[in-house]
Image (cartoon, rainbow, N blue to C red; front, top):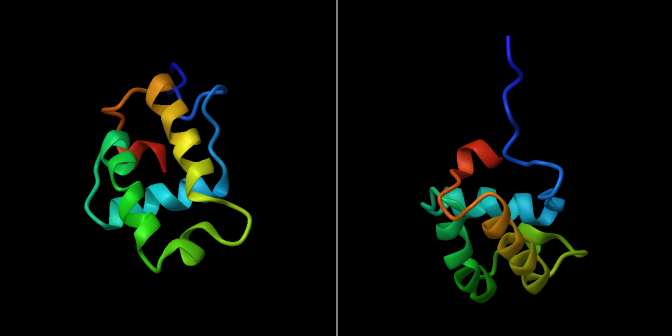
Length: 83
């Protein structure tokens, strides 16, 4: 049997804050990485930032990670396969 490729390949390994952000975006209705990226401003304006990112992450840092992910795995990558 062939191994299944992992969407979180060696090049795209998001932090815990970025993974939590993807989970938050999925709970808010996003299904793809580009939709999650589009929701970052909504997160930034919400009261959910401390709960989602904790104390060590920033929205800007997560934005940079997701931008890299958009380049690496593509904008249509399903969040369900990335979480």
